[in-house]
Length: 366
Image 1: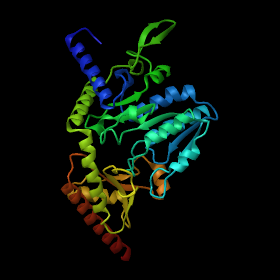
Image 2 (image 1 turned 30 degrees about the vertical axis):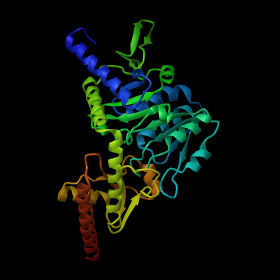
Image 3 (image 1 turned 135 degrees about the vertical axis):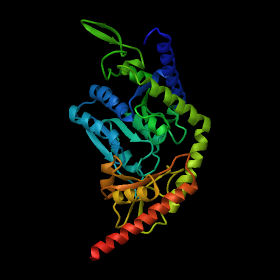
Image 4 (image 1 turned 120 degrees about the vertical axis):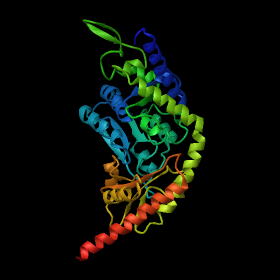
């Protein structure tokens, strides 16, 4: 943004990171990558630009019951503002996406399908290529929340055949406060700007303004250039490790995690089993243990063993309602984890659960 050598160097690093991210997801061009604060902002960008300018009363938005709130609430807001309606696709008997329901939900009024690539609760991978193909047959656009897939497996936007894809840097071994939106260039050009201010303009006069070219049209204000450069470095790091290798190893971790957790007395693990799932599950398991509250379990395994166990609704309240529970606990692994670490984590869960159930029984008897 300036002529000083440091400004030039910062700009070069910022744009080099954009090219790196573009290559990481095999975008058609660097101009299709828009830097955002996170995936949530990226989805809101689409909702507030394309959604508000395109959707009308009677139009239909299809989402799945397993979506993160970030891919639900923006569309609920837009539906309320435009009169569009939302259709929810439920779960199969295996706690995966019900594809029969999805096919039945499609109609000539469908304008958008917003779907997670991989569920952050169920660990299942959705059939995005098939979903995109069927959606396009009725003229709908497809948005994919790839937060749980981009860091864990090769993701190619050309192969997926979708219209937009979003991800967050902090899930990719990068810093917080940075994410990205990939969109087809022709579609991004047709969308109005999201925020107004510096950088997103070409010209400004007293009578109006014109927008900058892609991708800067959607990047108003001082960018998070340091975070963007770090995200580019994270992509280089993951690429050097090899996304195919990461996917293969995490598939082994996922199977081991499921098998070990299934040995815990009174446990209910959500999502399809490794045998039911087509291809490797994500390396995470959400679960409940009979007689044990997830919050108590997470607190105790942290205090006793230092294990990072997530507890709550995982920003997926409608999914938990569909599962018939208010919350769950979740163990997650990444490529840097080992079988031994999973064994230690599950042992901590088993020990804490046994203590909590004994304590609960003792308190009840007294």
